[in-house]
Image 1 (cartoon, helix red, strand yellow):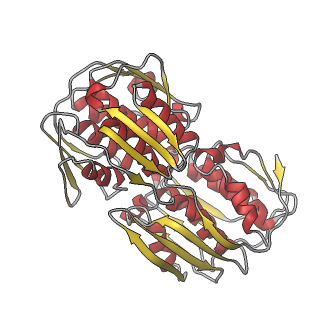
Image 2 (tube, rainbow, N blue to C red):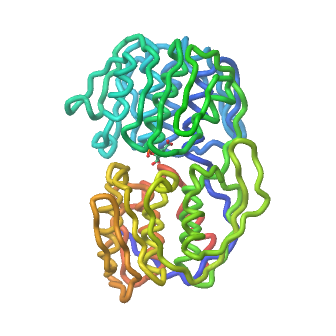
Length: 426
Ligand code: S3P
């Protein structure tokens, strides 16, 4: 349990860690492609290291360079059967996407994960991949890790999403691109599209028509160089931090601004928050520098399709309800219950500990501006990196005897969070 000194304000320039989603996909997709490609500035965290280890286990070479890796592969057609279990650790992206990458290769794999990951649903990828002809055996009636992928040959099918999940969509597209014929997947709402962007860049014939994505299979993927931008989801803690701490001012450099990820910016605008985006640049994956200052702001209601474009930022935005002039309400976000922790329960547990007035819904939550703070609150990280970072910021904002039970899990997406935050404290 750790106590923190109260921090008055935060100021400075931050370069947030590289994007976790794009780093996972670079490691997987450059492994599926033939040839040599470079990943420049990937995130090296517990989660992305799990993906790298999985790709090494099927015979792909990763050579470290000053700013990333050179990946050399003979392509998905020549993956070798791994000689041991693949451990996805805490990483849902590794578990779901790798299931899609490996299922069509006609080989035997066993995937597992840590205590949290073994509780999270895998049937969301097992069921549609089974429709493609893939064969699995999995714990808990075919729904959880550990799971076994049995050798099989897949067929192209037309699938319709049953959850708003980029991980499920990506698993299907990564299986589809290996499967002779055209696989189509129709989303329920637009979710992050990094997989589509990268598959096209590697030469896949992929088309997007509204919510319907089609990919031509048995594709000859050719390696490329990928430069990974900063992670919007890590930047979100500093956007939130500037609004939590008085007299604060930050410049967040090199942040990925793909609109399927940056829904939080639209919501901040709706809350009356002013920020600036400088020197927007990049190709298919946009990036830029965000400047933001402390200011007074309103609450908001978040509902509908935008939820999918800010799914990982919702606990941060809910927490801003404490500091807004009116409540923050989030609905249509039941997916939060199956993240690294149940993020509705975890957010509300900590905010109740602090003495806040909150309401819980099956698919969301409502957080009222805080009136008086319990300065002996015992905040919990719930073994969840994003919950840990918010708890640390709350403990620093209110000071007193507030404690946070664990900080180790920040390694999953932002290994240098504590030092980065400290360097901004005034
Ligand atoms: C991710 C998709 C999201 C997100 C996760 C990363 C990805 O999960 O919460 O942190 O890289 O595709 P879902 O697809 O399950 O919503």
